[in-house]
Length: 517
Image (tube, rainbow, N blue to C red; front, side, top):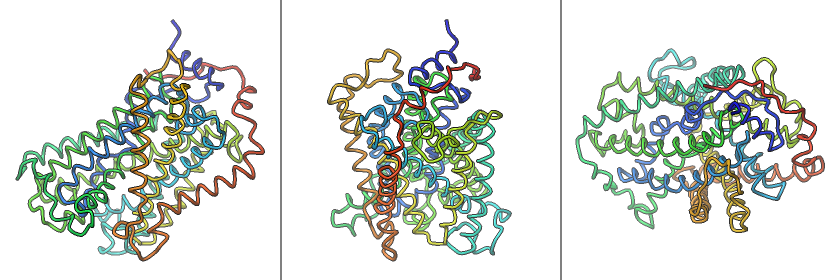
């Protein structure tokens, strides 16, 4: 019986690639990368106030509702991962599902842009969660800058913290995928333990029953559509959390048995995320002392934990949030790098030879890692102390993610209707079977609903003082699309050698890589 690493290398060779990356990620590492990217603890801590402010206690329903739509998308992506176990995930899946060369190129381009934007949120997040724990982390300004990134001093300090964190994260991703896996594993374990402790702690201090989730606090009064309109806005708190769950599959060529582990890691991470955050929000609402407290719509979960379990416990929560955020950015940078590498080896990017090179010392794509770090660091400088810009950036990221998802599940639906998907592949690690068509239709409709709801230029969410912030979820993806289209038409279409040209010139596959045990 052949060794698993040989089988994986042979499977990869069937797609036209040789094994160049090290297969060091096992089942738990793959799960940790997906769960770490979702970063439920950080999402709940950072976005509870938003949902509560717009929807009251009943906003808790947004997590299972948005979760169901996301599960439909996740099932389709898991099926793609089970049939196409290649580094680069969304780009490679789109390329194999569509006969067009443009659609996969655009999917890859937008996915890279998205992943490069994600690390730029690390500075403001660390500023908000670390400086209240200790003024050691406040290098600029006085006490008025602590806990906020919206003042001048707070914004500058956020850039400092973000740059320091990105430097550490870049080093981890350069020295090897094993260290990437370990960093995300540690962050996820800490996050899961902290989440369980918080849930148990809040549950034992419950002041009311679970029927609290039927209270709206009158939040629907200002909407023409009543509470439905309020819930649409409040549901953004859930939509801002449930994405990037496919990250494990992006590192498919560094994962053992990726056809099996990739889809399962994605779905386990997504399902656990929905369950955990729904339960966490529920017990938080049951435990909070006063449902009318202003802090619930300004601070949110950290306020509930501190006021219920004590300030020391609250500080521990904030430290755990910071660890979860760093773990998420480690995984996000790693996935961005792999998409750049995957497109470059197909000659789909400028400087493709350099961007597809692998370090002989660390077996990682070092040049793409440095490129992603430089771009992310540059984007940190957008922190000018305007809180609205972060709402816009967050909205842009989620819209871009779901557009990329649509560039996979859309062609998948067309191929399914034509009878060309799923392929007759006995090695597939995951298949929807007879449920494929209804799930696929639901996934496309669900993704479209999420995109429309987030991109909707509400003044309450994005402000009305700067049109480019209010319309950012439309304009930024639009600009990125036009830039990508121009590059493709003027440059890439003329130099594109075809998807297999580079692969034919590759040496025979080598099986000198290590695998996890």
